[in-house]
Length: 248
Image 1 (cartoon, rainbow, N blue to C red):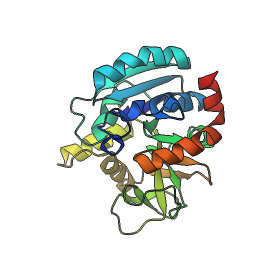
Image 2: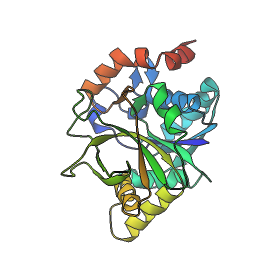
Image 3: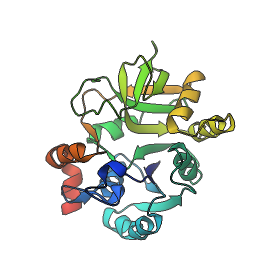
Image 4: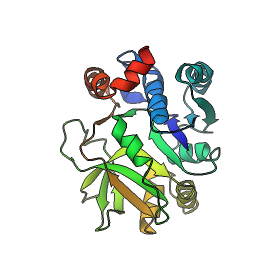
């Protein structure tokens, strides 16, 4: 199994701390390295990193990161990093023939999330999204969260930042088949902007977007200085094995 990490965006909300969101350190370890190590721990044998903003700098760092983490890393560059994140999914998925874990470079997870999600595939779905039912958790930024409304099967009925009804929040980790990139392409062909959520909604409308509830496990979207401060405090505890491997 491969993993795909989206690391193409500008990261405007972290600019006061770092000029590169993927390279922003959390307790001395860059976010991108945490993601790569988490993917490896979940069973990934290769990581594809989608670059965009400061692509040359990020791609130049990947060989040393691969050597340091002991996993193959391949770059995939999106043509226009200012476009919605679905374009990055398409760019990365072109290098992956089968199913893969999809992660955002600014999301970090305790081990049970990715390792559990990796086993949630099935013929009845084109994608499985890790979700958290703790919609009022103080670690979640309600102004930036992507919300999810599920049906009686636990499949997605609606997904987006502004949907009127929801019962879970998107954790930023997906187990994907090639259907996801095709759904994003279909949304673009229909005149949409090409966001990941648009592709997910297209699969949801076809009954092909499942969810998996994380059951109280820890995760964090490190998207602004407040979240970064929380990550500095909490990540070494919740990602103890990852930090031990990185600092050994």
